[in-house]
Amino acid sequence: MYLGGGPGPQALVDQVRTAARAGLDSAFPAYRAILDRQGLSGVHETVVAGTAEVVERALRRYADAGATELVVSLIGDPGERARGLDVLTALRSAG
Image 1: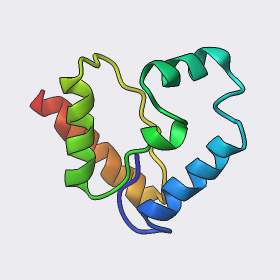
Image 2: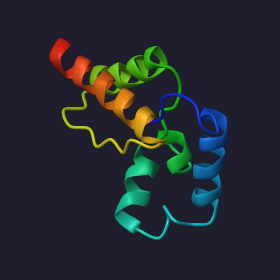
Image 3: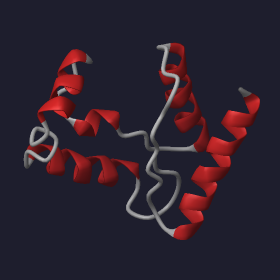
């Protein structure tokens, strides 16, 4: 999850997409099977990046699809990670 400054959401998605194309996600058969079941071509399609509102909508879509647990890796500078944690905390509190 990415919120805020730095290289920007699209640059981040491009970096993850490059890693996926390098085969990092396909190196783990179980993970590749999960992506295949979801109809995803790689990990780049699991990145949530944008404003707090964009991130909130994306996370709510996971919940609406039936997700009961979510693993989030906050990236960015310390301020961006803190804002991301604030968004996650608020969403969790709101239910």
